[in-house]
Length: 90
Image (cartoon, rainbow, N blue to C red; front, side, top):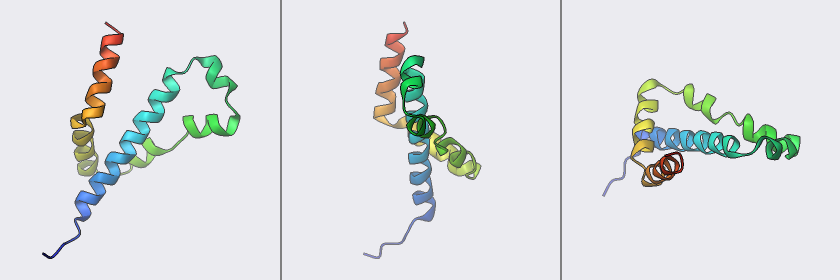
């Protein structure tokens, strides 16, 4: 079998990873009590709050971003996390 690289598929996979990282860091910092975030060493706090994943994702072509959004929305872990979050706020 001849395996051909799939650049579009690889780009979508990379974009999906970037988006998941951006979501994870955003959720991490938003779930912290402000005093916990303030107590973090400045270099660590800056890496968490200014990670750059979302900016990198936003610079991708629209069709790649759209495919990555679809992949994230279909991810079972994301679906479960959203359900848990919704249950906690009902």
